[in-house]
Image (cartoon, rainbow, N blue to C red; front, top):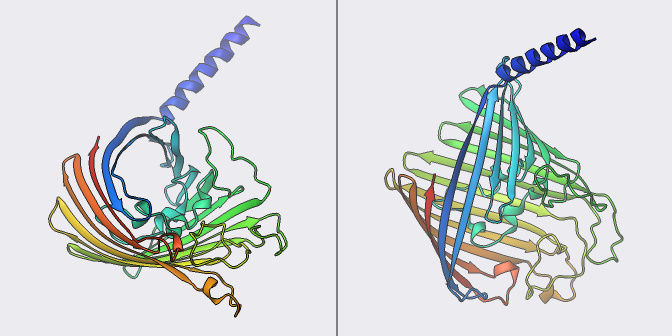
Length: 361
């Protein structure tokens, strides 16, 4: 019996050595520190403030004997938690599969895809355009097809699925919290690139599993649908872009007043947006951009009564951005002018400026 045990242990040890050699990989750490000075006037934003953003990303991966590669990225935030965690398996010919939370969603490849020197305008002023498809953030599976070359164009498709599309935070190693009102989420997108032109189209839907009657104000009664498309063109140092988004949360409510701030996904109307931008690389270190964006809230109620309460309201944003980098250091800034913030006709206009000093390692 002891001899049989020795034989078994020897075989086990040999298999572990073989497995380890087949999964050779490496781990790296990168991160960044960003300190910001933000000040403005209007809409309650009347005080100056200093912000600090520190992120650390751990990335590891390796390659199997058949050429399949695997990688893992986990990003830690200021609160010492994991803000995103994604595992990606890339096959030699069948594309890649990503499983994880936050950055695992395809929506971030399609929303507000216009060129900027610093950041998307929604980072300075929250908009529905940046929330398109974000209910896919929690643990989801995304498939990215191999890039297909056709008549000089490169075509790539993305498909995503999550059984619980409630956009609730998921701790590392945890499961998505069950939500009786929300079911599965599905997303699909395709990008086509030809020389300096790139076009993308995206759509996402999530199920509402407990429909309510229309008299139950504020309850979800239909599935939610979000969509986006964009076109960008780069010619030398100049890039231009145009993007549109559509978001129907599937909510029924009474008329929404034009003189009240709208809570995204709680109001009963539909959001549509369009944004345009132009960016110019002055040299290898410096770039500037200008972006204009309009986001319209449509109540979807054409009643002739209370005309003053069911008109559409458009929030307009104009932003000028500049960025300068020198090695691992960068200095970036924007000035943003906002009219009708949060789709409120009575809200004071906002003028917000941010200056950021960043270091990457």
